[in-house]
Amino acid sequence: MKHKTILENAIKAMRARTYYAQYPEAPSGKVYGETANDDAKKRFETLSNSTFNQLLQEGASGTVGEERSPYGIPLSIQYPAFSTETLIKNAQNAQKQWANASYEKRADILIETLEQMKNVFFDIAYATMHTTGQAFMMSFQASGPHAADRALEAIAMGYEELSRYPVTTVRWDKPLGKVNAVLDKRFYVVPRGIGLVIGCSTFPVWNTVPGVYANLITGNPTIVKPHPKAILPIAIWVAKMQEVLKNAGFDPHIIQLAPDSTQNPITKQLAEHPAVKLIDFTGSSHFGNYIESIPNKTTFTEKSGVNSVIIDSFIDVDNALENLAFSVSLYSGQMCTAPQNFFIPKNGVNTNIGHLSFEEVVQKFADKVKNLAQNPKMGAGVLGAIQSEDTYQRIQNTKNQGYKIILEPQPIQNPEFPNSRTSSPLLIQVNAADYEKYAQELFGPIAFIIQTENTQESISLAKKLVEDKGGLTLSIYTSNAETKENMLQELLPVSVAIAFNLSGPTWINQSAGFSDFHGTGGNKAGNAAYTTPEFIVKRFTVVGVREQA
Image: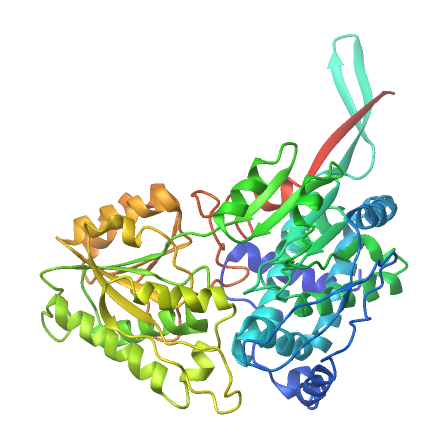
């Protein structure tokens, strides 16, 4: 096995849950090649008004493409389009060869795809930046090393689960007195069938590859259906996978890309096709609920939710509020883990610099958000650009709803891309009783400051939000050990990832491969988690075959 050491290290890290990264997150020339960045940038610049021709797929029936850079530069890239039946037929033709490969062989090939992916991390970064609006550093990290680590995590978990079953015939010998009952038994791991992975527009790689690699390690051919506005990043990834598969002697149609357009979508056709057995989905609750409702499918969803912050007291108020300001601002709030609702008691909170009133805490927070956005060295690099016009309009529409505005949204100046679609965060103050106003996900840089009677009401409201709407993260600030334990015991049953007293360079938005589970699968924000055993074992069955010895 060529990549045995990488696999063993990944399994070890997954079991220990401590820090581990196979792929360094810094865009270092020493790691990825001194000219890798410049070379990738030049390749990206030649893509405008061209057709993406790197896919090793047969049966194209035209082209599609409608991506536009949130940074205001033209893309106009066309992709080969395929009918649903062509994609299904290609997958079925490739299915048997991949299912018959040993899980060791599949793991080795899949790790090789990640090792080869290092050569195009910068290409994927520029593609991500100019389809999603992420700033370059986030684009590189999220769609490159961090995505690769999540993919490797899925491979490692798959290897662990598949290795539980003997791959050779075993002799079952049961004593029955004068005679024995003797059988030869063999256990076959049977893949479920074709997998469909539906991508999103804001994280087209990071949210896609866990399902792709979970499918493939368990023997299921996979079709990737990207968002029409963010095809290029995952197209580069799929093309590299196909190249590795072909070089290893396998049918490249084991993994396929299914580009479509907003005018002629094919997602429902693929999802409802009887040959598709597995569906991974990231996106809105409305469409996610539809995916979960399709009969005879095994689904893995990450849907919208409402993430909260409970402020009881501060160990270090300035460091904590700087951390929260960064979390609200990072990628303009367009992360599924970004905080939206901030619960603060009306009588204020205790801090390391004395008691602060509600108004003082809110003003301090607003000042830190404003200073970050206006910082010429940090603002554009942290906030990036707004991915879609819908999100931008949501900011403007929300601002005009008659709320008490704490901080007005402002354009972010980006000298390199002066035509960028940008906005600093909008901060709104409401009362605890205004539940319907803040009990919905307002995707983008929008945050509610909610005045509560006391910390207990803050806890109750945050808990109710997870129960009613779902949530991926819950951040808590308290300097009281007893309060901390009481909060934990009350909030654990609603199954949302909890973080206490984050400050410094660790933010609630982050989810670390091999250590953190992204999502829990235990509330309405989704039914799956990256990467638990359930994320793997539902993708195959075990069939026992007995024979009289």
